[in-house]
Every structure is written in structure tokens, then in C-alpha cells.
Length: 566
Image (cartoon, rainbow, N blue to C red; front, top):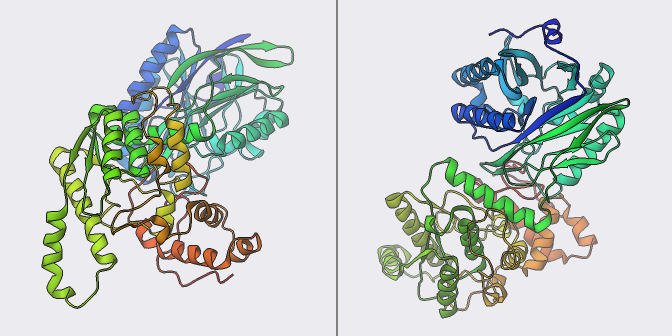
């Protein structure tokens, strides 16, 4: 199928004073071209019932975002192009579509957006500014497009900058200078704590510079470590908020735009509350876990419920994400497991309504110690024997996963991932970690939050699911008698404050000491952070909520001779 010329675009257009634009804030699956195409069809039918003239989708919707190196596969490129052409053929009547897909042309692969109208592809535009920082690596796979002009649509000139194209002034300036009247921005913008203010500031800046209203359409859903929050919005040219979609939920809603003497204005559009702060963090963790499990077709999850806060909140998130019938919790006690841990784990399982089993690990631990005893003769017990307990637990959980197909949820928090306070092939076993990017102090706060609130669509029970006594008791791995986390780590309030500065801000040791942190503690934490890189490389993926998560954002070498001496 060929793309029509600008002259052909103009011939389709009849001037209008009212335009109905449907915003499709949807959850695609990367690589599922057939499924994503069907979602376009369903959304188009919904929008048609709402009287829409045009339906707008998020960035690279047909391929799913981000496609990473999958988009380099010729067969995948061809599948996306065939799907786009099939959708175009269906637009002979009804709403037009503005949809994103990868596009190969003249030896270059582009991140494209296409207007499908009148049974054909009538316009195409390519992303200009390819992000190559943090979680983004688009220059690896795409070529940058030329500066675009507006797309004529029924007498209206639509400027279509793609996601990063509005983070600098050049693309929008070009669109404004060439006659654009409304800016429509397809996005694949993942959640992080500061993102709402950043998006709003950028959008306002482009509106002020161009004098044009802006419609921001964002993807929703989990994709590996990333969670896309949606929260699509519109700004009028006077910077007033004209539309707000909810976060972490799919929506197809139609907005009405009216032409006035001084330009276009969004007159009718939905408004919804947008989650922020700790509520947004919790919702992101739940959505990320739900989509990882469902998109990878696991029947459910299994996790070790220890009586500690980390496994308790992961169990709550799993039930909120999947429902109690798809969550299996197992207590794996040993002789160091306290009675209050047994009681607290059982209490959490009862309140959540999950299947709960107990598998004592003493026979396995003692058998392994017996096998190793000839080699270990004459040596004192140490962390080796402690790690055996963790590795037995990890092996048993993986065996249950293998037998029944449920994915193991691993439950280590960011404080543990930072300092290496976790056992490889033990408590680090698992397919996904919903709290990987939450520090321990944040786990405590979110646990208290969950006892008083849950996100819209959560499948877990209302009210308290994690008793106060569990939240308040001193954290322990229970791998030896009377063990407490603070035997090996600084108090979490101190540790997390230092880690946040070292990881998120790249603050130097000397700066932290100058700010009043104890010098020996800072140097110790920095050393643990550096030494644990090899563990983090082998850790399960998990939801990104901070500005700098381990894996996509922070990629340090394992073999690393540099140490900040302060």
C-alpha cells in the first residue's frame, strides 16, 4: 500500500468547526501485533459509538512499546506493516485512526505515526528526537525522522510530535511555524515518582511557546520493569487543564474540540482523579506484577510467606493484582523461625484469603549439612550454613513453580538489593519482584497505606491485611538465633537516606559526610553498594518506581576497581 501525497491529503479535507477526538489510553503487549490490532478495532468501535471523528493511540501501539531489539527483526517489521495496512483498509467509513507503528523506508527504520482515513494511509510522520538515556535506547534501533509539518485532517492542521519530540522546543516550533492548529502527542512515557510534574512543565512550555492547545495520549500497562501509568491529559492554549484521564487504567473517551477566532479549544472532555505519591507507587507495583504474570501467561504466583514485612506486602500486592485464588503462599520454617513469625504469616494469609501451606525445611537443611560435613570439618558455622537455609527455601519454591506452573514472586526490597543483603539462588530466586525499587522504609509506609486504602480495580480485601505488630517488629532474616537486620546493616532510616543519595543522586562520599552523615557508615554503605553489583545482575526484574532503578537506569560494571574514598 502506498502513502498518499500532501495534495491527496488535502483533497480529503472539508473545513470543520467542531472535531471529536477519541483518546485511546490502552495497554498493548509488546510483540503481539495481532492482539494490539484487535484492540485498535475494539477501541475504534467504541469511539464510533461516541461520535468520534478521529481515534488517537499511544506511541508504537501496534508493536507495543518499547519493542527494543525485537523491532530489528524483518518478520516483525513486516507484520506491523501488514497490520497497519489492514487497519487502513477498514477506515473507508467511520472514524479515522492516528496510530503508531515501526516503519522501514529507504533503508531506515523509523518510529512512525500514521493517519488512516478513507480506506488508506493518508499521512505518516516519524519521531525526530530519539531518547537515549535512562530506560530509553531508541538510537540503537531507530533512525531520526525529518522535522515534520502538520497533517491535514478534515480542514484542521494537526501537529503530531511523538513523545520525546515535545521535550525540546524544535519540533513543536517547526509545527507551529508551518501552520499546525492542534498538537496531538502520542506517548510511551513510563511511571516514575517525579514524572507528573515533569510532563506538565514540558507540556506547558510547548503550549506557551507555540500558542497551541495540546492533547497528550499516553500508554498504560506493565512491560517488564516499566509501568506506563496513562494519565493522558489536554491543555488549552491558555494553559488550562482541559482533560485528565485516570492513571493505571484503560480508557477510551471522546473529547470535543471547537474552533474559535483565536484557535481551537477543548470544550468537553472527561476529568478523573490521578493517583500521586505513595498511592501511585503502590498502584504501579500492582499493575506491573499483574501484567508481567498475565502477559507471560502464568496461571498464578507462589511466594514464601515468612512472617516479615516484605513478603507480606508482596502477598498483598499479588492478591490485589491477581485475586486470592491465583496466589499460593508457603511458610518454610526452620528452628530459628519464631512463633510470632508463624502466627503473623498465617494471619496475613487468612486476611488475604489465599492458599497457605507449611513446608518445614529442617530435613533438607540437615541433609545438606551432612553431605558437606566432611569438607567443612574443623570450621566454625558461619554465613555458609545460613545461606543453606535460604537456598533450600528457594529450591522448594522453584519446585512448586515447576510442578504447577505458578511463577515465584521474589520479595527483596531496594535496601537489600543495594547492599547485597540477599542470597543468590535462595531468597533471590523468582521470576519477578514487585518491590525491587522500594527501599525498606518505603515498604513500611506502603504497608500502612494498604491497610487503609487499595487502588481502583484491586482484587484484594478492604481494610487491614498486615497487622500493626508485623509492621512494628524489628526486621530479621531468622537465619540464626536472635538475628536482627541491624546486626549486619545500619538502621534502615539511616541506610535508606544514604542509599537514596548514592543511587538516585550519585552524591559523593565526601558530600554525604559534609552533610552530617557518619563517615564510617557512609563508606561502609558505599562499599556494600559497589560489591553487590554481581548479585543485582542476576536478580529478577521488578517494577520501576524511583527515578533510578537497578538494571535499566543504573548499569555499573561488575568488575570495577574504582572506590570513592571521600
